[in-house]
Image 1 (spheres, rainbow, N blue to C red):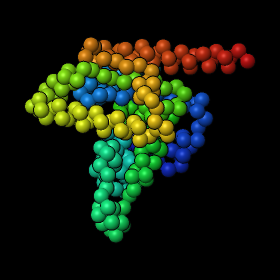
Image 2 (cartoon, rainbow, N blue to C red):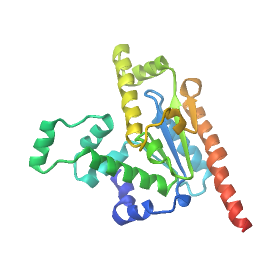
Image 3 (tube, rainbow, N blue to C red):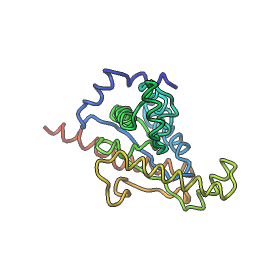
Image 4 (cartoon, helix red, strand yellow):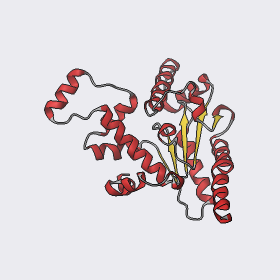
Length: 240
């Protein structure tokens, strides 16, 4: 798992981050409400994209990023995970970590998250699930930003089945996880928008479509937006 991120170390990542925005991507970000099967959708999506791509370059990334960032900061993966979960350090914890030499501020974690995620997105041919990707990759030229949603109790039932929870536990889990994901998106924005929905190119109701159908819809949206603008750029360049 760690090996896949060796390409984003040191000078190479700095080179990627300095690339002109016109050379960024392509990337698809998937933001999802809790219980919408985002990872399964991403897996199906990458399979379909690679079926259409002779080089089979596409991959999808979710939690693996945490381990790369933790390695870079020389800290435990739990420290980065806690940043995503919105756990703030207490004054006492900060003091203990400072004296032990292991203190890593939220700002430093946030910068590492942003740099790693952005470099992966700029390199392209990646489906990024969550991790604030819609905010971090908002300026990537060839990007499609999709949100997967579903009715609350549809999602609760799905969580109950997959995680073997009772309804009260599942309700609490869905509400709390939705809030953490919402706050992660906000944390990487310079300015809070009036409506987060404006960040997305499309929202798909998972309650109305199977996992495969959802992936197929995203492929269609990708072709309509990203492939179309890539071909248009090539056409304009050829005309000069």
